[in-house]
Length: 279
Image (cartoon, rainbow, N blue to C red):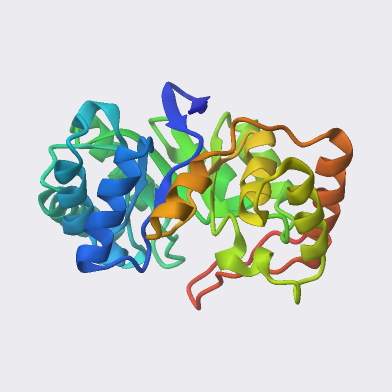
């Protein structure tokens, strides 16, 4: 496994995303992932599966200190009192005294950063999170958050895959020394469908390396220095998704995949999403 380092955090470059994984499916996916070599788990209060993620961790037999665990506080809990309640519930669900990374899941435009960011910082100061960061933040939001934070924000978790251009927000994250963590790194499987513009390029490049389209998409992100958290509960896919460190895309292949960004296919944009940066 390779890592991305940011402000003292050492984030495994491939992790397991768990959104929509429920009940025993989630427990088994987490257990299997850890047993086949994953060391990075991503969950959130909103996913409703923190108990199962914790159960999968314990069932795996892998030591807690060998696993990097991220959870998130959602946009309706960003006032100080609600933030503490949400985090304490998350830790109770996970049956853990702390998480390695705690994120603001989505911003709430009605709660100023001067309120939400100190609440996030307090979680670190209280020892409930080793590191803190944000998710779904735009370039403007990053600058505003950094202006009021007392602790380093180690990452910005955003949607990222070959079919979306995130150059501006990636550059802004790096300007602040932050890691970028990509969710939906294979666009929820859409990279595998020939109906998507450019999917044939992914297939052709995959064949050249004897890799799947999903593995090519993940390798593209890895070579860009981005972490990725693909979600799957299928054992074969769990193994394949971390098997991306034994091949390298050429400069020409990377350039060809970069051109696919022009598709600008955003998979996730709920009603509470910010006004996204335009390419």
